Amino acid sequence: MSGEYAEYEGKMAKTLDVLRGEFAVVRAGRANASVLDNIRVDYYGTPTPIGQIATISTPDPRTLLIQPWDASSLKAIEKAIFASDLGINPANDGKVIRLLFQQLTEERRRELIKQVSRYAEDGKVAIRNIRRDAMETYKTQKKKAEITEDDLKDVEKDLQKLTDEYIKEIDKAAEKKEKELSEI
Image 1 (spheres, rainbow, N blue to C red):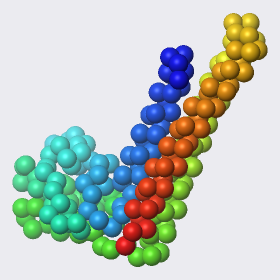
Image 2 (tube, rainbow, N blue to C red; image 1 turned 60 degrees about the vertical axis):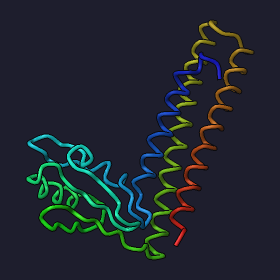
Image 3 (cartoon, helix red, strand yellow; image 1 turned 90 degrees about the vertical axis):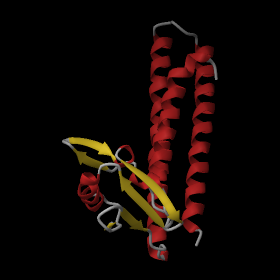
Image 4 (cartoon, rainbow, N blue to C red; image 1 turned 180 degrees about the vertical axis):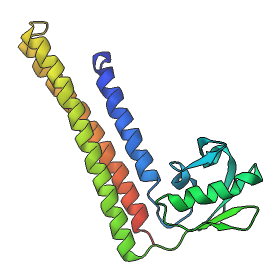
């Protein structure tokens, strides 16, 4: 797309990035450090991401191991995980915290796939809203005689093409996540 649509394309790209981030934190039954991305620990009065105060590793496919650099933050990390909607009980041995990911039940798998579908639909709505806002801007320019009717038609066609590209990307990302959730 040409540079004149860069503002709108940037907004669409940001929407896609946010959506991919939401997909990343949907738990798929195997250990993935990204599920901790949105959890903040009260670290000396400052809400801090776990990854900034601890080493996170995956010793096996179903376990996350959280080893704080400052042993005094262990309880705060455990508390933050309990308070989150992660649905995993942390096991604290006094030195590290282990998160054991259970195999997903079929029912839980279906719930997560529905959640992914809702996220995808919300993303598509956001993309369409960006297109609508862009069209309003160009229609206003047409009313002010800043652009011609032909220019407006070209803009509409270009913006629709851009919208279709981003919606296709959302569908691909959702399909990939749903496939990941469907694997046993």
